[in-house]
Image (cartoon, rainbow, N blue to C red):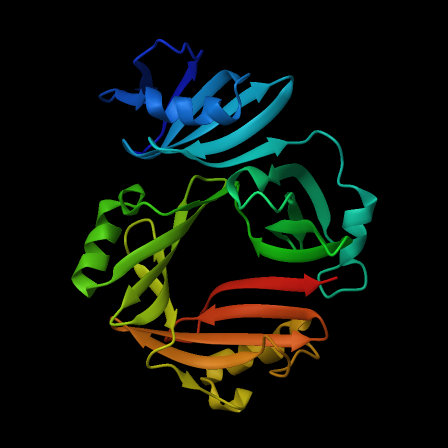
Length: 312
């Protein structure tokens, strides 16, 4: 049964807990008042709150309204993990123009949303993340602009990411599925933090940063606990030439049109093979000017994930 619980909640400060009812017949779950309080501490005017379970008894997605603006957020019992303001206007021309004359030009933007991050950073950064769905070459992606000010100058970092409706960072191991917690324990790995992405079908993926024997690793898990990729500083074999990679990876690089003229030359470029807990992962970062593709492949040479970065 899918792990989704929905209810509209009107917050009352004296209320000890709020009942959340499964969409299908099942035992009920309680959203603790502390999780709701974590949201209303940042958004005291929040109304029409709708909570949905992401991790049972631990993490909830919350949709709500404040001063006629709509928001989507995630919270655990201790704090608000992320919040986006959902925008109704179209993507500004000043931002959509940033993809012109790049290898990812030609797509369509929809579903603009904005994340202000000054309230949970160091206080000296008043920037924003702007997100939109980006339909390109028959697939949907998430496009992210980082808009910030460096020495008084506006700077843009544009990224193409796998499609997601929500992404949040947690530094609490208990916010991860038990099967992933058990996997880390079996590895003798010390948890640092995780980035959790939730797609439009509520399917989750976990990018987990850990330490093991004084080495740092980035592990990618599916929600069923399968370790998909693992990269890190130890036991990494680096290559100088693309023809040293498995034939299936070479074929992908040669036959993918948007990789034409990209090479393993530049500050972000990298060709490597990592081995961890029985999982082999190939990392391929190719660069063309200020544009970079970051790709990970499994031991069969099949693409697992790729992202795109352009510095403007």
